[in-house]
Length: 261
Image 1: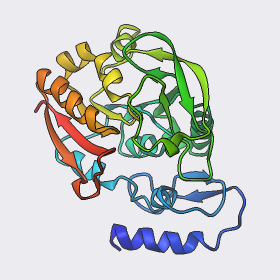
Image 2: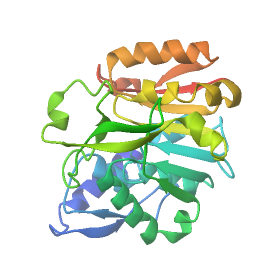
Image 3: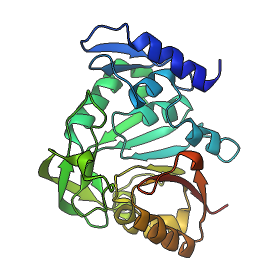
């Protein structure tokens, strides 16, 4: 069955589920069999996650570039842990970094429900930025709808202001990637970065890591200006960038893979 057919089949099945929270298995891919918690019937990316096809192009782009068995992966902006589960399913050790308290709580539930994969995943509930300390943070706790996203207030957030209408603001701890290394974290072989417009802040805080270790980068960019500034920074650090899933890119979001190979 093709990924598109599998996703359609899962969406048909979703329509028959009761309108209450429940645990449902991922149908295919490296995390097949892992269970994720849903608040009720839903569409969009939740169905893609259940099908095991969400952001499948990420893993297609890794194939042939990195063998993740035994690799160290940082999932920065881990959301509810879908990608962390996949990285663990591929044999990696995963540091899942997620400052949104609602997402982090759901991620913890996913780890408790999937102990075999959870053995290779650690959660760090902070925001990655260009400074250590605290920063203002905008977050959503909508676990049923289109987004439970969040971003640092200093970020260049997605262009559509409705995405974060009605969100709450609070202070969250922040850390630089270089500081994580100084504190004893093992340097990553791969970084997946999805931080809703704070991509430049995150990478600026890891210049030493990027210059010396050259991890493979998978980045979701959320603002057209960031697409320019990030490319400048990464070219200076010896990286080559390539667009992923270009047919679905929009001015406020695209995906790139960056490598120094």
